[in-house]
Amino acid sequence: MLADMSDILAILEATDSDEQLVEEIALRHPHRVTVLVEDGTVDPRMDDGPRGRALSDRLAELLAAIEQRTGAVVVGLAGSREQLRGWRFDRVVGAHGALPAL
Image (tube, rainbow, N blue to C red; front, side, top):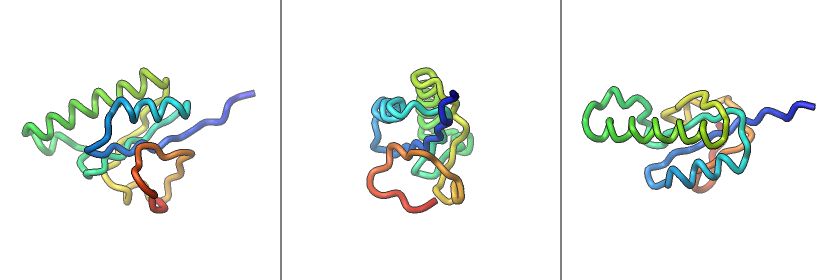
């Protein structure tokens, strides 16, 4: 019997520990992960300054860690909850407080 697929929405906030987020994701044994960057910046190429480079480096390390630690496929990045309207996820991790309906 095949295991059910699981889709996780991982919410990355500025104050989160990336290692803690990866651990939270790993506990749920996902097959696919979508990462929501809470500050709305998912294209660091738009900001070639120190902030953009730091975000780019952080995202690269986070996505690699998710894939290596969980075996899940990171299927995308989103910069706002509005981009995810109508999407369905089995679990949401990394959100502090209630998540409004997507």
